[in-house]
Length: 451
Image (cartoon, rainbow, N blue to C red):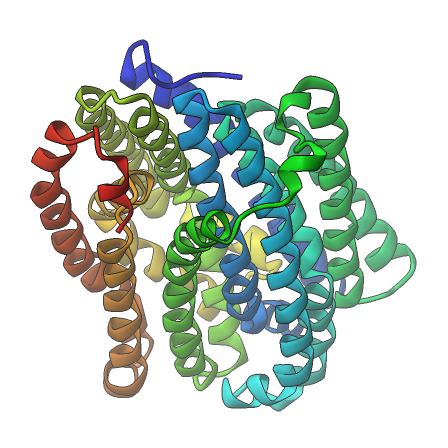
């Protein structure tokens, strides 16, 4: 347990963010290992199949992740205020709402998955492979939701280390299962999907056992399971805010993926490899963003407005330092890393993916501000502007898909995100500047920040 309401803001955020970043890194690594094993044992078409469906899983599971992270912000605020009863009731509400929403999404995704793949122009040669992989991931999406839910609760009370430990363990389990299912049992991409699901279930089980032993005060008591409509509404409002933010971004990415699918299997494979690297390089931004969301929420509950601005500034500076390192990686090491990930030396794939990296990484300095500001506003209970920024991203990617990509080819895809990041960041900085004086002056009326 760690309270983020006292001590040096930069140190507190850094020590809280590092385990989150490492945990996300291991998630990305075993996703990357899926790609490497699939590429070297099945082929480039299988990599394209995983890549062509990644945005679908990111959309639906990302929605669930955003939902549970939003619930955790409410839990963190009650923890910061020292109200254990409300904290446990928020945990109960998180469980009820998470299970209900994941059940609905599972049913809908199974009904509409094939038509959705058709809408995305999934190439016919990889259609069935794509379906076999993503259908398994979505059928068991509740496993991912339960892990994200339990990890979010632990982070809400300041424990970002334990979810990391469990992720490391499950990552090694995932690698072992990949080798068993794909190499030994010749299950193809279905083996990669089953390995991911089993690892997620194992992570959730470890979190449950740990919470029961280490944080029993988080477990709702019998009378606290009767969560009121108002409490559910509060949780759902914050959860939907983050979930919509996640899903709107991914809807834009799905639209963009439709344009990418039109360029053929080799371009899809190149884009998949480049995005794998980009996802890893962007991890510190999301980690510091998550840390700032919890930091701001705890300080909101504790009535410590003077700490908010200092923490946000420190997080941005630390992210800029990482951005400089990411640019170096993108320009120096991209070709060799891409070749390793894709499992091919094919010149077109390696050069196209490397070009993507070199166009995108210099704009990470803007992305750092975007992610930290958006998460901080969410932690302060500000819902509208973060969601509006995500709408800008979705619209921007739609413009690329229907205008820039047909006119400029894959280069239009490359430049789309940097342009969109710029406009999103302007909105978020304006939103924070507008609210900063209110945050400093009126922490007494907490509900004012939840509208």
